Structures are given as C-alpha cells and as structure tokens.
Length: 51
Image 1 (tube, rainbow, N blue to C red):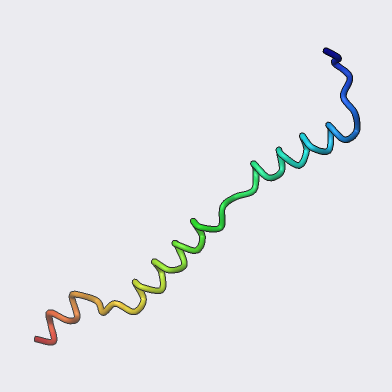
Image 2 (spheres, rainbow, N blue to C red):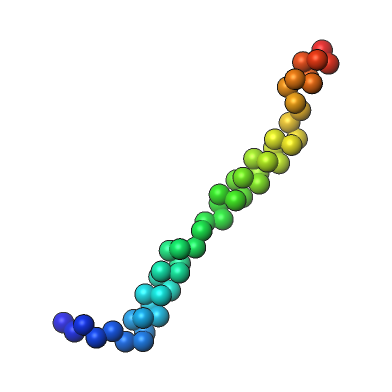
C-alpha cells in the first residue's frame, strides 16, 4: 500500500471536512419558530388580570 496522496485525495478529504463542519440549519429554524410562537401567545399575567 502506498502512502502517496494525490491532489484528488486532498480535495476529497477537504470536501469531507468542510461538509462535516457545516452547521445544520435546523437549530436556527427551531429557534425562530419558538420565538414566533412566544410572541403570538398572550402573557398569562395579563390574561389573569383581565378575568
């Protein structure tokens, strides 16, 4: 087995490293959704005072 790496091997490893390091967009999407739902929900303290 040879220990010689080609430019193609280097590019494949670099692509793999970059894809692994990319953050998943799901977390930011969930935080945005949670913030939107919180802003639409009435404040429980003001709802209790109104009754």
